Length: 176
Image 1: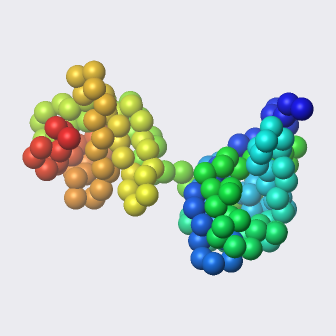
Image 2: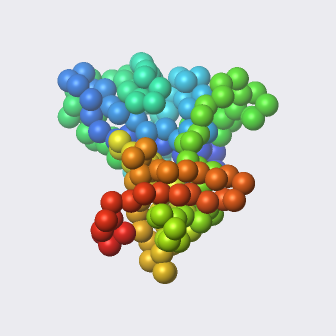
C-alpha cells in the first residue's frame, strides 16, 4: 500500500545514537522546532508505510536529543539512524498560532551578497549552509562553487545597504 505522503511534513532527520538508553540526536528544521516541542509522536517511512513512534522525551533545543518509546538500546536506535522525521500536516502550527520566535541563522540574509577578500571581488553568495561547528558560505567564483567558513577571524565587515560581505581570508583558502 502506498503512503499518502501529502498527510505528512518532513521536519528533520535522526543523526546518530546518543548514550546507552536508545536516545538519538535529531536535526530539526528551524521552522518546525515549535511543532516538535508540542508533538507527542513522530513518523518514519518504513517499508512503504508511515509508522508512528511516541516521544518519551525531547530535550536541549539547539542540540536536540530524542528518546522514543520502545527504543531502549543503541542497536534499536541505529535502525532509525539517518531516517527522515515527519509530523502529520494537521499538527503543524499556522504562522499566527506560533508563540516561539526562533532565530534563524544570522548569516542567512547574505545570499546574493557580493563578497570581497580585501579589495578583490571573489564572488556572489549562493547559499548559506550550517555544518557541525560552523556556518559555510557557498560562493559562485568564476562558475565554480567555493566554500568559505563564516568565522569571526575571517569577517571584516557586512554592509547590508550595499549587499557586500568583506572578508580577510588566509592565503590559499580559495584554491581548496
